[in-house]
Figure 1 (cartoon, helix red, strand yellow):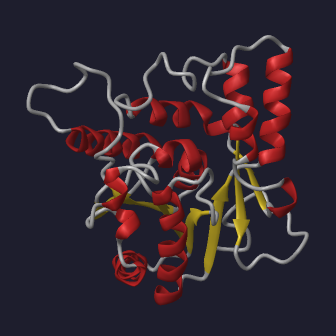
Figure 2 (cartoon, helix red, strand yellow):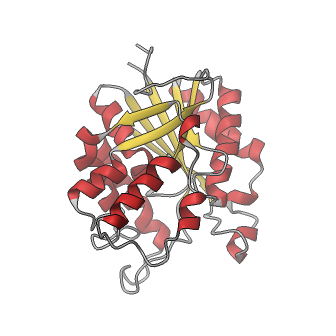
Figure 3 (cartoon, one colour):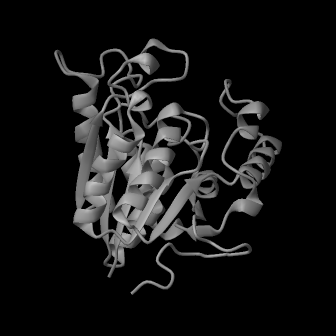
Length: 264
């Protein structure tokens, strides 16, 4: 059996982006480790959701632990950086935020986990962080360097199949499905990568109930009435039933269906 380490920017990212492959790996007997760069301190939360005196980061840490139990994660680690918010915000300039972190120093923290775990596989994000969030871009930079330091043999960039999403959104709109008011065609154009760059597409439909439960565990960020969780089952399957990756050492034309292909 092998060890998979998934590296993410904030609590809840893991459930949305790689919840299926994490649940699949755990069920198949592999060791799954989740590393999160920040505690999501600057996320949005509905008024009155938190208990008096409770900080958002405290709730999000507990939500991450609950999510990990759902997915079968053996270990959760936080690197200790602060959520950076979006480009142009004051939070993005804070010296202790992840975006401002020294890449070499942050990579050393992650590499220590990779080395201790003897990780066989690491997942990070693509070079644009999937959709341009600074903390996601930093996950890409830090993760690739950490893999070099630790000698992790296989690295995948988690991404979004832009062409698939465009086809799906068009079909949904034609079927009369109401899209979020703030979601535009320009947003789709900035998502992920073109289909031809993807080397690995994992069908996670058998693990969708666990993936959905993992997303719901992050109730401070993903409520049951959110666009994601309010989807009809067939639409949820279409949106989240596959997870996409670019294998960093993959040859042109590679078409994998499993992160563990060729590993014992």
